[in-house]
Length: 123
Image (cartoon, rainbow, N blue to C red; front, side, top):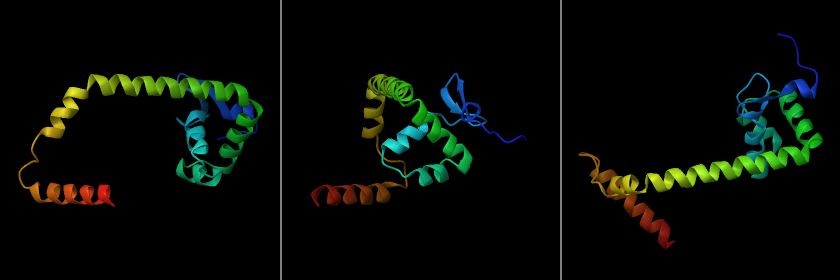
């Protein structure tokens, strides 16, 4: 495999958006971690990126800051809209699951979990 030398070759546009070439990792994935105040070296480690991939992504983001930020905001808004849609659509089902009794043999575990949640809420 030939080494990738230019930033433009490291970032490609796919159906998922701006993506690190040869991976399924989007720049939006990186930005989510970076905007959550993760240091770049931890993001690199967490996503199993090479130093060159991480540096290429950071360089691309810096060079195209406005474009990347605008796309990131659209991605975040779309994800939130999807989350709200599915939450509303599954609200009744999730409520039924919450109200259903524990599976046989797990009653003690659920009792301990409820006790810990109650203690945590009162702390």
